[in-house]
Each structure stands twice: as structure tokens, then as C-alpha cells.
Length: 145
Image (cartoon, rainbow, N blue to C red; front, side):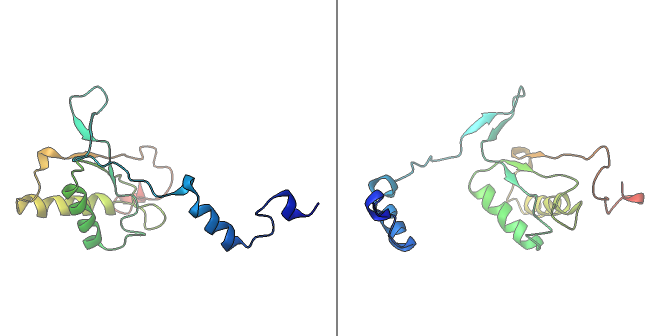
């Protein structure tokens, strides 16, 4: 038996197969229900209520190389209701390791709080530290650790 007789897609071009798959009821567009606001969840055993969405900063200073871009991203996160942000002393990762994201986050907080655009008491900021000093050298410390 021919390949086409064994499977109807066997003799089709990749484009034709993709078109048939996209036209099938299983892949039809579906509406995703949206909430009016981001869901808040209790943070561990604390009384802090944080958004399920946490804004990350890991690529600021490397893939996202402009502080203005980080400010725009933070402004949008807050506009969308995110109150939980994540950073680390070793960020960004990829290259250009260390200190950038915490510095940019601090600069953003300073300008936005001073302008009355952000209430610092409503934001939760998670950070991490590389206590063992293993990995990239820290650029702002003597000896890099």
C-alpha cells in the first residue's frame, strides 16, 4: 500500500498539513476569560497578599540593555496591578553580571515615589543573594565577592 493510503497526510506538503491542522475544530480560536484584576495570594505564612504574577528583572542590563526600557516595563506592571517584583544581586544573567537590576529598580522607585506615581508600601520586592560567592564576580565589591 502507498504512503498516502496508509495516512491521508503522508503525501501532503508541510504547508497543506499546517493549514488542515489550523482549520480543525480542535485548534479553533478560543476566548480566554479575563479577570477584572490580578488574583492576590497569601505569601507563605505571612500576612502579605501578593499578585500571582511576579514581575521579573533577570534580563535587565543584558538582553534589555536600557534603563528606560526597565522603567517602562515596571510602569506597565504596576498599571496592570502587579505588586510583586523579583530581583537579585547577581542579575542580570547571561553576561554583564551583577547589581544592574537592583540599581535600576531602586532608581525607578525613587523617581516614581517622588512623583507620587507609586506607593512603595504597596509593593513587595523579592531578592536573592549569592552567599557562597560562587559564580560571577560582583562588580561593586572589592575582590569581586
